[in-house]
Image 1 (tube, rainbow, N blue to C red):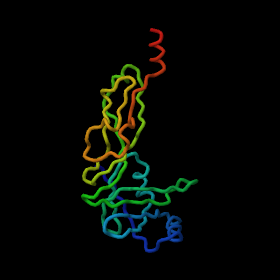
Image 2: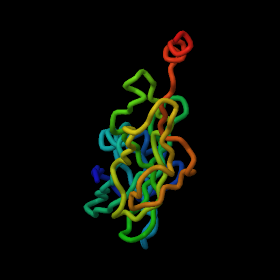
Image 3: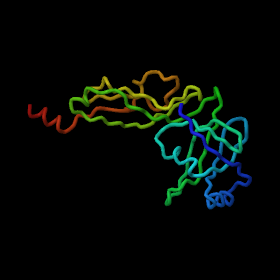
Image 4: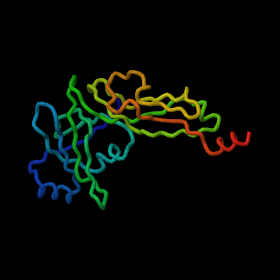
Length: 190
């Protein structure tokens, strides 16, 4: 699994006033939840988190807070409504053997017969919600479309066992091959 390291500094003061002062100083307030420890309040900077936040990839985050490292997942991020600046980030500590919920991106693999004859691939779901232990988490979930013909789709229930539980409804289509207007018109003329 891909990892991403973030350096942080413990926050001595918390609350609205302290958070606002941190943002003015160019720091992003963050909180680490989970584990036997209490919640850990810390700050980081935009250059440290930019590639994590603005990436479609799924990462295990290694937090280095004042020399102490912790494995975690980024759970929530808050943006300013007008400036789109990062206001706050929440992380969830990973504890071996304990269950966590995560959203893992999908990766379409294979070449569909339906696409080769002129159909259009529609990807309807970009990420799947899973429930798993940290050891079983993966970077991506591969979705094979090689057996799809025109008008067919791959649903959540069609995915092979991954070692974790997919929370999304089983009948939700992930990707489908749509019959294009040009193919329909060609079929009507024939």
